[in-house]
Length: 150
Length: 311
Ligand SMILES: [Zn+2]
Ligand SMILES: [Zn+2]
Image (cartoon, rainbow over all chains, first blue to last red):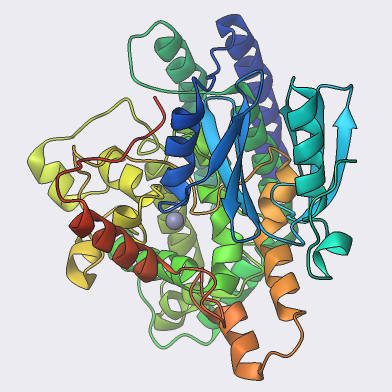
């Protein structure tokens, strides 16, 4: 029994290495967002009635959407797929500025622990940092105040 | 226990099937067939697979122990021949159907099976993305009745193995449709694409292992439709390629729900055994609710066809 398991595991690892080689040959063809309307269209696949003001990431790899009602929409690229989440108060664990151009987000969600959003406009970066900071567990508890630029 | 010759044959077939993965990658990269691979997704599949084999090695005795125990208390002596194998195969396929249906309809069992559905891709390497906890959830008990009737554990294990090996080739986009009689009788890539879809219309459909007749008989058959392209994955897709997070995320989610304050015991049971998407305050949506919302939306916008989807 265990020798069978080991044999299969070895085959799998060999298969994985072979695949990695094959895929590395192939190169990447990842997708990028063309604009706000494309971002909201992708987001609505998961949240059909969503609407709001969209900030598309500078590198086209994601977007943030001000949904109203206290929630923020996040769209992020996973290779050639788009992933969407509605972030409510308490869902964000930490927000850090990453190298001056991006936001590094950590979430309470075990199945989506972190994300990075690249924003090249300093004003937008500061505004989103404050907005997402207001969704962190500590900030979410008391009734939310006007977001303050950090 | 199963004769070693069957083990060797099954391992050989499994190895040959695994070789089809790089072949599919190769043909897709040469644009000869339709298949979409992504490096991190496929490597995550391999990582999940190694864990799944490890835990099967650790906990497989629960399966063999349960079946062997039932066999020692069997009602009849079903002979160990070709016809008993065929009969066991059909009955075990029915067992697979119900195992699969329960695995989708009750959250504790879904927490184990969701792993297989958690990729947003669908290709031969999706086969590798298997549960780590299949022996641990309790549904292994469904294997007991056949042994209790009197089928030899070796026959049952072989039927199960052949069933799983059959399901390898249906994880592909490269085959559109098989001949009509084949699509009617057997599970095919088209039927299984629907099973891996997150579109509300396709949720909780096509649970079959080998024979499609169970879905047709028990009302869970949904055909793949040209006007509704399949979006692979789950309702709340994962934002990680980490095999441990992939394998355990739904258990963490259940634990967090159970630890909520001010829930009644019935509500806690709902979070544990209720259908995926059930919530005590209606803040989440089950498959039925997602379908109803989608249908209402279609009614509101009858002129708009298929919704936008990633290119
Ligand atoms: Zn399934
Ligand atoms: Zn599958």
